[in-house]
Amino acid sequence: MKEYQKSKINRVKRGQNRAVYDIEKINTILDAGFIGFVSYVYEGKAISLPMAYGRKEDKIYLHSSQANRMLLSLLEAGEMSMTVMHLDALVLARSGLHHSVNYRSATLFGSVKKIENTKEKEAALYSFMEHMMKGRWDGIRPMKPEELDRTLVVEMTIETASAKVRDVGVNDEPEDENLPIWAGLVPLKQIALPPISDENLKEDIQIPNHVIEYYNMHK
Image (cartoon, rainbow, N blue to C red; front, side):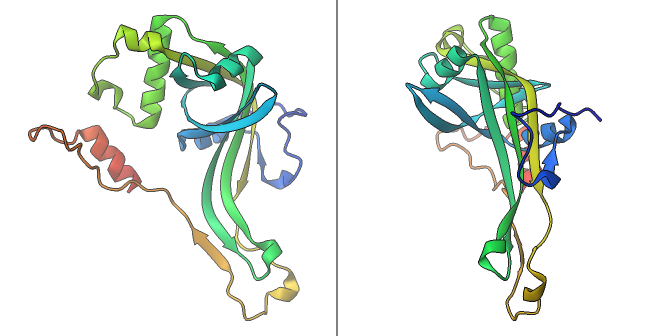
C-alpha cells in the first residue's frame, strides 16, 4: 500500500480518523468524479472555480482557451491545488449540531506546466475525454490543428494529496437517543438519465454503444 507522505500542507488536522493518504484510494475518488474545484490567485484576489479534469497516473489535465486567466495564473505560480468531492448522504441527527453529511473528498497539491508538444497535447486531451466517458474519443471527429493551437492545456503532477471520508451513521449524544425524534441517513446519488439525441441529428444515426454503456452503468 503506497501512501503520500504526510506534511504540513496535506496533513488532515480536524477529523484525523477520517484521513486517507493511500494513493490508490485517492485515485478512486478522483476517477469517480469529473469536476474539481481549483484555487488560484488573480491580481491579489483568491478565487476558486469548478473545472472538468482528466487523470492519467499521477497527472491531472485541465484545458481552456489560450487566454484563460485561471490557467495562466497557475502557470505563473508554477503550482496548484484542486479538490474533488462526492456527497453521499445527509446525516440527520436528533440535534442540530450533530447533523452532518457522508462524503468522499480528495485534495491535491502539485506543480504545473504548459503542454506545448502537439502529440502530448492530444494525449492529454484523450485522457480528459476518456475520463469523461470511456470510448468517446474514438466516436468523434479528429481534432483540427487550429483547434489544438487555440487550446491551452495544463498538466499538474500530483506531488502530495490527502482525502477525508465519512461513511458512518448518526453520532448523537447518548442522552438524546431516546428522544421521540427521527434520525438517520438520506443517501444521495448522481445518476445518468436516458440519452437525448440532438434535434439536428440525422434520423439514421443511432446512440453509440459507449453512450449506452455509460448510461447503463450510472442509471
